[in-house]
Image (cartoon, rainbow, N blue to C red; front, side):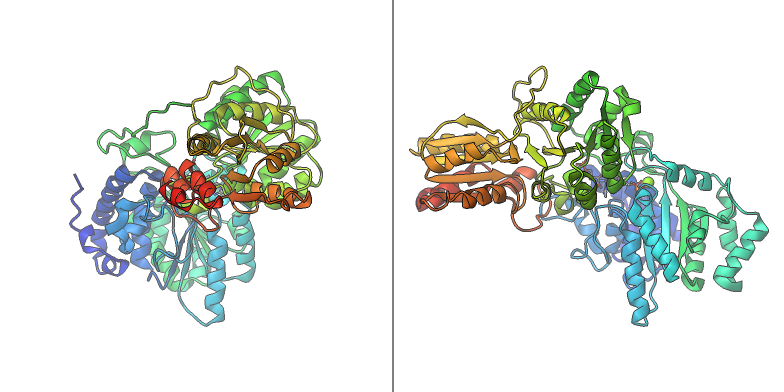
Length: 635
Ligand SMILES: Cc1ncc(C[n+]2csc(CCOP(=O)(O)OP(=O)(O)O)c2C)c(N)n1
Ligand SMILES: CC(=O)[C@@H](O)[C@H](O)COP(=O)(O)O
Ligand SMILES: [Mg+2]
C-alpha cells in the first residue's frame, strides 16, 4: 500500500516546497522518506544514500532557487528524493526500468539536473565550471555541489578544491559525511573527516565567531553558531579545506532542518569565496533494515517494506564475480606474491572474500582508480603479482596510468575486468563497453574475455602465471552459464583460441560470453542447412592468427561477436584480415558489436536482443549476409 503523503502531494516542484512554512518541513521530509522507501521497494536501486539526504534535499530546495541555482549531486545515486521533489514523482516507480527514470542525475531528464553523473567525484569540478561561467557572464545564481565522504577520496575532488581555492570562486560545496562509501570508507582522509566530525579539531567559540564574521560579514546569524554548537563542536580552524582557501563550516547535523536551514540561508545571502559545509548524516537513515545492514542498503533488489527482505532470483550457476574471487583465493594459496587491489568496490569485485582470507594482501584504496593502477604498477616492480580488480567502466578513469605506468614499462599488472558488457539498470554510465578497445590498442597488452565461468577460472590462473607484461581478462555482471567447473584452472596458451563446433560455410567467432548464443545460433543455422563453425577466440590480443586465417579461408561468412564497442575485438580481427589480404577472396565479414550509442538502462537480455547480439540476432545477420531475406526476417 502506498504511503499516506498529504503534504508531499502538494509539492510537485521546488517552488511549491518554498511556499510551505518552515515548521512543515519535518513532516514533508518524513513523507518524502516514506515515498522513497516505497518506490525503491518496487524498483530496486540505490536506497541508503538517498535515505541519508532526505532532510538535506528538502533544505537545499527550500533555501535555494533551483533550477536557477545549480544543485549538483556527486555520483547521483542519492538523488532519488531530489527527483521526487523536482517534477518526477509521477515516474519515480519507473526508476532504472526500461524507458523509465535513470538511477542517476541526467541533464536530458530534468532542468533540475544541471549535470549528469554516476561516476564519482566530478561535482566540484563541474560546479566550479558553472560558477566561473556565471561570473564571466555577470550572473548571480548560486552553485552548490554535494559530495559524499567516499567520493571526496578521489584525486579529482582535490584537483577541483585546489583550483576553486585559487580562483576564489563563489561556490558552495556540501560535504555529505555519512562515514560510509559502499563499504565502510578506508584511508587517512576518511580518518581525518571522522576527527573533524567528532569535534576534536575545533576552535573555541570566540575564534569561531571571528571566522564567521570574516566570511559572512557582521550579519552572520546566531543560528549558525547554534547549529554548529549543537553538533559536536565548533567551526574548524586550520583544516585542510581552509588551507586550500575554503571557508569551512561544520559539522552540522544533516538531519536537523532547524540547523541546516539557517546555515544554508546565511551562506546563500552573505558568502563571498568558496565555502565548504561539513554535514554529518547517516546512510540508511529512517528505515530500520537499512540502518541495521552492513552496507546500509547501498544498492538493493526489490524488497518487502515491512521486513526489508530483498527479492533474490534463484541462480543455476555461480556469479562470475564469485568465481573470480574464489579462484584468486585458490591461486593465492599457491603463490604468496599474489595481491589484490580494489578502488572502493570490495563486495562488487569479490575482493571482500579475498580480504577475509588474505587481509594483508588486500588493498582497498578508496575511490581512486588512477592511484589503484599505479599502486599496482609499483607492487609489480618489486616482484609482486597485483590483481587490480576494477569494473570496466571505472577503469576508464585510469587510462593514462594503464598506458604510461603499466603498459610502457611492460609491468605484469593483472586486470580482472568485471561488469564487461551491458550491466542493466545502471545504464550507459556503467556499461562496460570500451575496455577491449582501449586495452587491445596498447602494444604488449594481453586481453582475454571469458566465455563462461570455467574459462574465467582458466584466465585467473593464466594471469597469475603470466609475468611478461600486463594482462587483462573481462567477464560480465551476473551469473555464469552452469558449465562444469574444473577443480583448478589451467594455464591457457597465450594467443590461442579454441573451436567448439566444426562447420563449413559460416564461422561464428566469439569473444566473451556471447559464445552461448553463438552455439544456439549455430544449431538454428545448421537446421536451415548452413553448416556452421563456432570458435571462442579467448584473446583479442594477441589474436590467434592461425585460427582466424583458417576460418577466413574455409568459410564463406565470418561473423565476430563481442560484448564491446566498435574498435574492439572485431577491429583487431578486421585489421589482421586486411593486412593478410584475406578480405580479397570473397569472404563476407560481419562484426557484431555493441551499438555505437550510449544505451539506456533495461534488462541486459533485452539490451543484447535489441543490439542483435543474441542467438536470433546472430542468425539474422547470417541470413541477411547470405541474402536470405525472408529467413532473416523470420529469425
Ligand atoms: C569513479 C567511480 N568509482 C566507483 C564508483 C562506485 N561507487 C558508487 S557510490 C560509491 C560510494 C560513494 O560514497 P559516498 O560518496 O560517501 O556516497 P554515499 O553512498 O556514502 O552517500 C562508489 C564507490 C563510482 N560511482 N565512480
Ligand atoms: C553507484 C555505483 O556506481 C555503484 O553502486 C554501482 O551501481 C554498483 O554496481 P553493481 O551493482 O554492478 O555492483
Ligand atoms: Mg558516504
